[in-house]
Length: 451
Image (cartoon, rainbow, N blue to C red; front, side, top):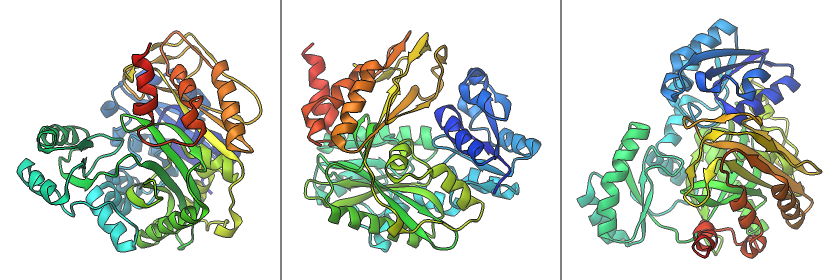
């Protein structure tokens, strides 16, 4: 096992990784920008290094500075967390070229799964169901309209290098397609440095369900069941739960087997997630693979009893998986909500000075904090304040505990989405398990127009 690990990230995920490393007697090194000097994770780590100004390209995306800190501190490995450099194949490659261990899959696999067109092809070869769509990049709007004539609307226009909903848009006719193509292409070029676009048939009103996988360097792999992540705004997840209230045992098993096929085809090692769209008949289609830890990983930990960060560290250190598929089972029900500094009417970030944070306590309640009660939520990064995770013996008990916890939760000094979360999880459709990707559009937004 490693003696010292550098965490190339910030906020709540840095604190999360530090906690597991401390339990395993691994020293931690973190990097921080000028905007994060008072962040909790900076104090929690064994060593902290200032690497630049607030903007990410001057700090958290500066690979040279991060590698310099790793060498200076004597770190043996780098954990990328999620976001930022976590799915950057060049970063993974440079970490290994520097003689360090990258806690994640190979740079080749990251690159392959980072290109959505290549990923679709890989999954098709592995026998994993994919959404009907183009097999190559679409050159321009004229070609896009010709393809649309053959496939039929509605369609999804997507950036090949995209993620987090950036460069992705549903279109219903030629006019919408023409308008969306150029705009999304420019966004993709800006965010990912790659403007390639492709098209898929739109699965109307689906659920977004993902399978967590773990694999080692020796060909051993397991899936840790599913997470339901359908409740989203602007293609960003807001509420996640495990297990899904929708899947039958038969579909759950089939999706798990498909995820393991993908892992075996790729020669994947470490933690990863296969994301699917699932229709009303429980037909499922590959959406993308995230070659990293997920924001919503705590709900999987709660129902399986595993520490996913520990598993990542052990695999990266060259250990074999100590768990087999038959050892795993679903115990209870867990729900995670993301507490954001945002205006719930517009979903726009609402940065500012946090004056106090009151956290509910009690059985089955877990917190992952990005800030403390006197933090400045800056405009430079994702406006997440914290994650609240609750676990119960059943979904009904988990919802009851979450409802109580959210009524006790207080974010003072700035706007937050706590009220929005209360409305979602107390809605009858949520209680009934009707958690489709259209949930907020259908059930939350109409309540705003009535007030």
